[in-house]
Length: 89
Image 1 (cartoon, rainbow, N blue to C red):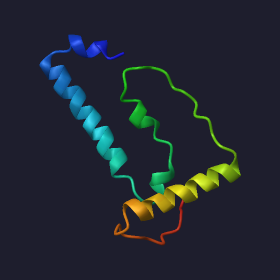
Image 2 (cartoon, rainbow, N blue to C red):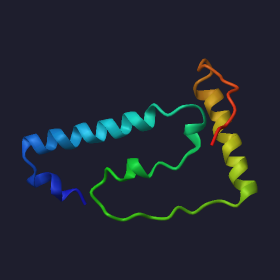
Image 3 (cartoon, rainbow, N blue to C red):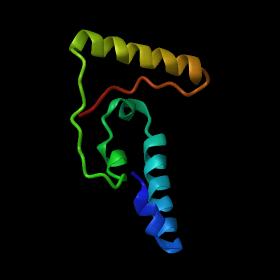
């Protein structure tokens, strides 16, 4: 799957690592309502050209997952700043 790496020059590998790090940082630095979004730009950093369509849970299950995700943030980041900023389109 990653055979393309074997033929890259040192400079190409460095460029690839920098692009991957930037993508990971953009994803890591999401906060607030951005945490809930689908991030195809991150997967676009992979060399594969597939663009799989995600399986999306029905609304009740989806909302339960959102609530559980938010609860996990309380558990994993209890001291993270909180905001009551409303969602804006």
